[in-house]
Length: 116
Length: 112
Image 1 (spheres, helix red, strand yellow):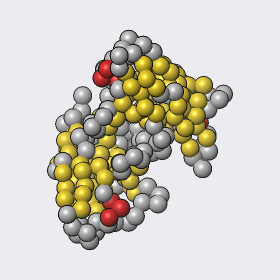
Image 2 (cartoon, rainbow over the protein chains, first blue to last red):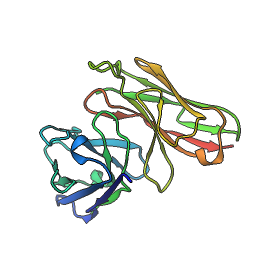
Image 3 (cartoon, rainbow over the protein chains, first blue to last red):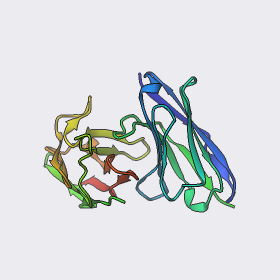
C-alpha cells in the first residue's frame, strides 16, 4: 500500500524553525518527484514546494523562497522540509504529496502553528 | 503566475441531481511535452485531499464513475452525474504545467 507519513509539526514562535519529514512506503521513492502543499486555517490549498526524483531540482512558492529548503534522502525514502524564519502566516496544515506534474497520493498532514 | 478561477465557489445540490464545477486558467495548461496537467481533488473535512481526476479527464482508481472531467487549453469542468451524500466537501482544480503550481479557490459542495 502506498503511504506517506508526515511528521514534525508543532508550535513555534515567530522567527523560529521547524523541520517537517515525510516517510514514504509502498512505492519506488526514487521514481517520483515529491511536493508539499499547505492549508492555512479557513483557507484553500496552497502549493509550497516540489523536488524532482533525484533531488537535483527544487521549486518554491515565492511566499517561502529563501526561508524553506526541501530535500530528500533517497536511501531512507524520506522527504524533509526545513522551515526557517517562520512567520505567523505560515500557520497551516502541511501535506506531503507524491508527484511532480501530477500529484496523486497525500499524507495525513502535520500541523504547524506559528505564534508568540 | 497562472491564476486558476473556479466557479461557483458554493454549490448546493439536491441528492441524485447533477453538479458541475468550472475551472479556468489564465494561461494554456498544455505542457511542452504535449500533456495537460490539470488535476481535480476532493477535500472532505478532517481528511487529506483525494485526487479524482488527472490530466483533465482520467479518473483515478476507485473513483466512482459518476465523476468525470473534461476540457482543454484553459477551460475545464468537473461533473458529478448524480450527487450522493458522500460527495460533500470542497473541490479544487490544480495545474501542474507551470511554476509555481497553483490551485483554484475551491468549490464547496453541500446538500440542499
